[in-house]
Length: 278
Image (cartoon, rainbow, N blue to C red; front, side):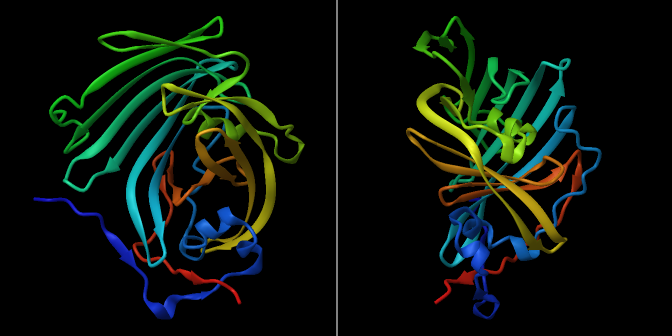
């Protein structure tokens, strides 16, 4: 049976003006759909420098609806005070019933960029996470960084790219921002590895702002960091007072935290939208 995206249409009567604090920030306008009905998961013993697992839903925001397009999980396993492993499982839903699945394991330094030293990643199109890859979509890659050179290996070849100076990865940044110091952070200029294999130089990670927002769970204090640079849309990371990454706003997509260490929050199937203030 053909699998379809679930389109979450919003009744006109649920529309309401956007609070000025939200309307003045493009990333807050993205999550305005979620704030009034979103309850973050319980803290559940979360320690940003320890062992934890977090689950996220991925949404595409359109003028008249919010559509869930996938989900992913991050699992951090500490390897002492200076290193850790990050496991990333991702599912992006396709139109044909197949989904794109990615599974990665990254060995990282516990620094401000969660710098990955080596990693493996598998990709495939399939009907289920454990299903057989569609045609030749199943691929396995490995990568490592040594002496300023990024080496990407697959079954056929080895590709090498210069990687001087500081660098990070699109996915390990999701771990890194949960350990940043807030307003005292100094901007970091670095090279971003897009997905798992494409270096993009001239990126900057920096503190953005701190706000107090009303959610379904009550008033929450959130701290924002941003990444800006070559070939990637601007991304804003919203972290709560416990250090947990609650929202990621990137282009027309929003990632929302749905569970911490197996304990879920509340994210209902119907979302209010907003009309622009006059």
